[in-house]
Every structure is written in C-alpha cells, then in structure tokens.
Image (tube, rainbow, N blue to C red; front, top):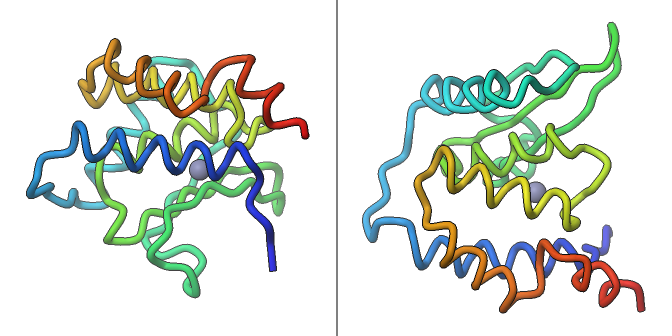
Length: 150
Ligand SMILES: [Zn+2]
C-alpha cells in the first residue's frame, strides 16, 4: 500500500476547500473533448510540456474515479492524462495539466502555485481567496516545504 506524502494530503484538503468555495452547487460534467481542449489551451499558453500528451477516459481502470497524470516511456517520453467521467470538471483537468507542467514536484509548492494559477487563469476562481485559502492550509509556499520535512 502506498502512503501519501504530507504535501499530497495537504493539497487534497486545500483542493476540497477550494471546490466547496468555488464550484457551483450543481456542477456540470464536461465532455472528455472539452477537457482536452482546456488542457491544450493551458499547454499552448504556457508552451509546455515538451513531451507529447495522450488522453484517456478511463486510465487505470481500478481507480477509475481518480484523474491521473503519468509519464510513460514507450516510444519516447509521453504524458498520459486520465480523466474518468466523474472527474471531467475544469478544476480536475487543470490539476492534471499542472502535474504535466511541474512533473518532478509531486503535490509540492511549485505544483500548488501552478495549479492555483491555472484555476485563476482558466477556471476564473478568485486569486485573493485562493491565496488566503492556500496560506490557511499551508500549501504553495516555502514554509509548506519546510514543515513537510519532519
Ligand atoms: Zn494530483
């Protein structure tokens, strides 16, 4: 069984609070194609990632309720972003795009800052409220990193 690191637990808690704050009470699921368009707009705007990206509706069948971003290396490195039906929402697509942009950071501070930026730019979530919330949950800052090393 895999243990989740402190950054991951902290980020998930922050993300739940952010969704409660910003998601409509009756959120509409997107089509997979709309999620792909959104992620492609992120990559175009940020000129990333350098590796090609493939999309999967139900990558990792056994945890199909989870969205995912994995780096495969078959015919060269390629990201595979999995967005099962329950995760076809802008915040989830942007979360996975942020992983591709900050691959080596896990759910660390760089990832968190990037994800917040994408939620603001592409999801129209409020920057000030997100920044306050991030501080409250201890994500996205250098202090979050030092607290994680225990
Ligand atoms: Zn993640």
